[in-house]
Each structure stands twice: as structure tokens, then as C-alpha cells.
Length: 363
Image (cartoon, rainbow, N blue to C red; front, side):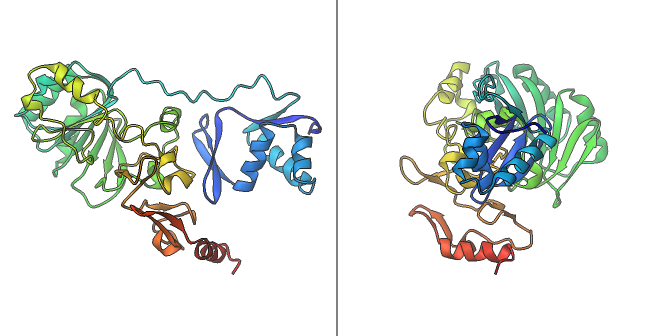
């Protein structure tokens, strides 16, 4: 191994550390994987990104020279970083999010009696359609909508029990179909049918380990936007126009629109875009979670004041003890001495530290 004195260590630009309350996750966008390091080692990485290794070792009073060398060498062996004689000429990852579409996701709760002609000729990333019954009229209506909306991918949310024959017929009929969500079942599993991902799920809560997404597009969007509500349009079964099915405010009815420009005026309004910019770094608990840039969260953020936001329901993951619901040792935020509500955010650190000490076996 080459001498590291007066050299610099760099993570590859597609390996991004995200610091949480107890640990840091390093996301490898090239290999689509992630792994954890202690927060103290994230602090070392942060120092190494600005200063040479000799200076960083001195910063820690040279007490951890061997550990720092071992840490860097291990990252090199894992193909996550490299040594260099200079800290220059290695630009960081571009975190700018670029989206050519005004609306990137359109979700329609299909009703053949609605006036979908009021929709403009949208171009969008994804078109999601809730299918409430299956017959020839349903298929014809979906085809007419697809002609109106140009989309890259198509997803169906089927709310009734459907036979395997009809399911396979739907999959075969739509070439851009990428996912089918079957919402009538009381189980969680996934299979591939005809090249389409079929998920059996109630979708009551999006957040679980299996739904964490290692995607550069999602990561860059999450820097300034809410990855669930941003640029989403929802049309309900009665024609109600909303930002999403979870958002409470209704902005009109598609049957009352006689010009396609009218819905664009709604979309361009500040009120319609209210949740688009409420990213995880603005929300209690989420902003201290290491998974915040891999997570699509359908919970509705609640505003406490001009700058603070919180969630009224708990996530399935508790970042203060690094435990998922169902894991041994899992406790709720309340059980950990953490409160997040309209009155404010507080951590009982004495109680939390005692719990973590016990979980780590140091009690």
C-alpha cells in the first residue's frame, strides 16, 4: 500500500455518505448498494475531503492513526475510494435535480363517467391508474387516457379481486406497464408476471426496508423536494383534483373544466404546490434519519410554524435506535422519550441513551 503521509483520500463521487442520529449510511449509486459506518468515521471522511491525511491524524492528536489508515484502506479494498496526491481535480457529484415535466406523476382513480378530455396533452414520467372494475369499457377508457397522456411508465392499482387470467390479459395489453399493485390482499409479497412487477400490498405505509430506493434521480430530487408529493397530480373517482390522494385540499373538479388551461392554472398555484418543497431535512425525525434520501414517504407533513414540520404518525423505522418495527429491541419514539407534535420536538436524552446502552449490551 502506498504511503499516505501528505496524501489525500477521496470517496468516489458516486459514493455518498448520509449522516443519521446514530450512524451514517454510505450509498453506492454505481453498485446500487449501501452500508453503514459509525458517525465518528463520517466525521473523519468529512475532514479528509478538506485536508490531507497527515493534518486529519493530527486533528485527532495522532491517537487513531492506525484506525484511520485501516478505515481508508478498507474503503479502497471495497472499491469505494482512492488515494491521491491532491485534493483538486475530483469534482463532487452534481446534486442538481432536473425534471422536464411540470407533472412527473399522474394518478387517476378511474371512473368512465369523468371528463378526462379536460386534461391537457401531458408528458409525464409515470401514469398510475386505480382500476376499480375490469371490463371492456374499463380497457377502452384506459386506452383513451393513454392517448391523451404521454408517459414513460405505467402502473395499475387494482382494488378488487381479479382472476389470474384477467390479470395476465391486462399485463399483455399494455406494453409500458411496469408495475401492478394488487390492493385487495392481506399480504406483502412480489412476483414477476410477463416482465411486470406484481406487488401484493395494502399500501397503507410505503416505508419499509424493501422499499428503500437507491436511485440518483430520487437522491437529487430529495435535496429540495418531497419525493412523494412533488409534481404529482391526483384525480379522484368523483373528479376531484388534488395533489395526491393523501392531501386534504380539493382544487376543483375535472368535470367542471371546459378548457385544458384551467387545470394548468391549478397546478401552477402556490397552494397546489404546498408540499412539493417540504423535503426530509425540514421534517422532525426524518431529518435525523440516515435513510432520508432513499425513502418515498406518503405520510402528510404537518406545519408547526414557518420553518418546522412534523409527522402525526410514526415511521416504521426509528433512527434513534436504528431499529425497524418488528425487529428485536424495537421501540416507538414515545417509548424512547421522543416527542414530535404541534407543541414542539423534544428528546429525553437520558432515557434514549439508557435504551441504546442496553441495546448495545453495555448495560
